[in-house]
Image (cartoon, rainbow, N blue to C red; front, side, top):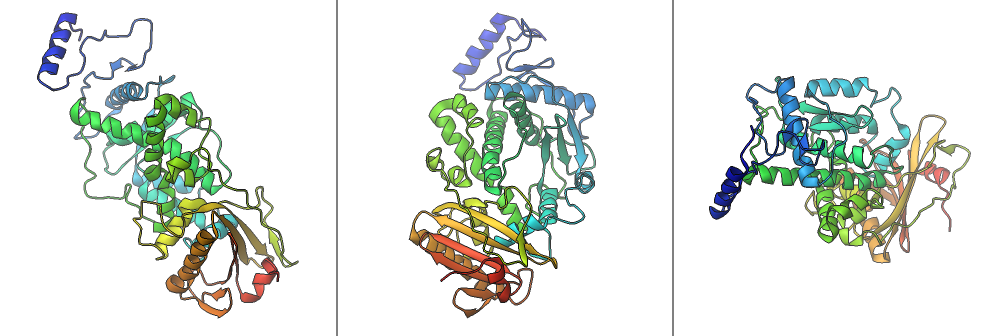
Length: 442
């Protein structure tokens, strides 16, 4: 409905005098000259939508809510959508089925990545890493944006197609990021995947939080649905250690992006998409971005003829400070808050590399070399890792630097050695395999 300009001015003045906020009512039905920030598909950011949320949203209602939410994201983010974003709503059961059918858990698993997660003492030999990650995501994902299909999928906890306004806003930010900056490609290490996601998810969470604040005191918004007590969404099911790792960008990212925004506004946030943080250390400690970059760690191959590295490029992975924190938290080596991602054993990380190995009989092992800012930092990590083996996994210590976990998902032999600012963990099925995987010197 069109509003007279004088009426709009009067209402705004009354609102100002009353100390409250009303939406501006002077918009034309369509912006002159075509699309503009704050208007999408027939809806201004402060327009009402005629929908009923109690029985879910039908397709036309979903399109209306999506259009207005897109306009509101533009208003907050000061960036324009270049295309309409389709939104699909599915049940959690359907999401789990799709995850399985999409091959997220392959028939042979992922033995290379299994060794990486074993080194963190988070996923043992009784559970493959792909399976642990897939199951954890299936229990916690509320929605996702697919850059390959240019669409949003919202996971509903009820049988009716319910859309959570916060989830929709969050995923629409990802669509905007993709349209404006591109979200193709994947960083090559676990640490850089998490640090890049710290920007992507941090920005989306920051915008989502602003959206929710305006729903509280400025905008008329659809109600937030009740999941009916069924749970299952965002609760951290599956493997708790894996959950702590994969949720880190959502937890640490908003504070990191907020610190960048405070320094330079949205232009500075835009620049993050051209210069992502180089590590989770920079996301956890925003003051270290962009100057404190991780050191490059290489692991010499000292294996014998029975053990080989995987035919993979890169040959090893970098797990980083966030994943090391999860190791310490879930193996009882810190009493820090689970979502602080700051602990004495993980602080002072400078770089690392985990190189998996395999033998001809299907056995696995790894060499994990980490570098630390100071000898004290290296010592604290080494002491904590040994403590995790002994206290959380009942390892015995048959000789200096060698530990044996007798049973359970981490039943293996370990050699943990510190040399100055470097800590090296060698893992294999038996003590005799340790030198076969990485011959000791000295």
